[in-house]
Length: 283
Ligand code: ADP
Image 1 (cartoon, rainbow, N blue to C red):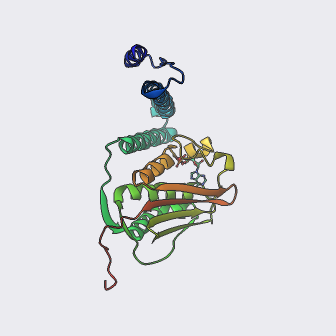
Image 2: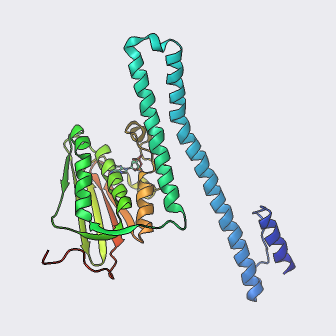
Image 3: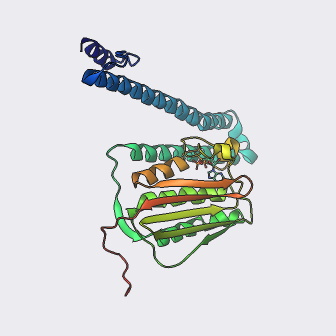
C-alpha cells in the first residue's frame, strides 16, 4: 500500500512514467497495482496523442498563414501599383483566408463531437429529402467537374438522428466524391432503412484509394495525396468528422475502394425502434 500511495502521488504530480512495479502481486492489492499502472499508461498515451495533434494543427495553420503574409508583403512592396497583378494577389489572400476558415470550422466541429457530454440533437426527418437537398447544393460543383450526381431509389426514408450532423456527413462524402473523380464519372447516392439500420451510401468511380491507406483515411489530417487534397481546398478532417458523427450515433462508417476504379463510403446508424412512424401508409 505504501508503494501504491507513492505511485499515485507521483502520477498526481505529473510523473506519468511512475509505475507500481508490484509485478504479478496476488489478490486485491495486486489488482489495484495493475489498474494504477494501466491508468498511468493510458494517460501517457492520451497526452502524447494530444501533443501530436497540437503539432499537426500548428503545422496545418502555418501553411496558409505563411502564404497570407507573403502575398500581403508583396502587395505592400510595390504590388499595389502593379495593376495587372494586384487583383490576383488579393484573390489568393481571400482563398487562403477561406482555407483557414474551413480548417478552424472543421477543428471546432471535431472538438464539439469529441466532448464527452456532446449531445446529439435527434429529430425525425426524411433522410432522402435531406440527401436530395445536398445533391442540389452540390449540383453546380459537379457540373463544373463534368460529373453526374444520381440519387437512387424513391420515397421517404424516415430517420431519427441529428439532422445537422448527418447533413455535414453527406456534404463531406459528396464533396470528396466530386473532388476525387474525373470528368464524366457518375456519383451515386442511396439512402435506405432496413433491419434496424439507416444506411447512406456514396459511390464514385474516381481515383480510388490504395489498399494500404484504407485503414488510415479516417484519421485526422491523413491524406493519400497531400498535393491534391490541398489544391482542392481539403482540410484532411472531413472523414474524421464523418467517423465521429457515426460513432456519436452508435453507428459506423466503412469504405470499399480500388485504385483507379472508385470508392464506396457506407455510413450506418441504428434506427430507434421505440419511435412512432413519421410517415404513415395512408399519408
Ligand atoms: P480531405 O480534406 O483531404 O479530402 P478527408 O478527411 O475528407 O480529407 O479525406 C482524407 C483522404 O482520404 C483524402 O485526402 C483522400 O486522399 C482520401 N479520400 C477521401 N474520399 C475519397 C474518395 N471519394 N476517393 C478517393 N480518395 C478519397
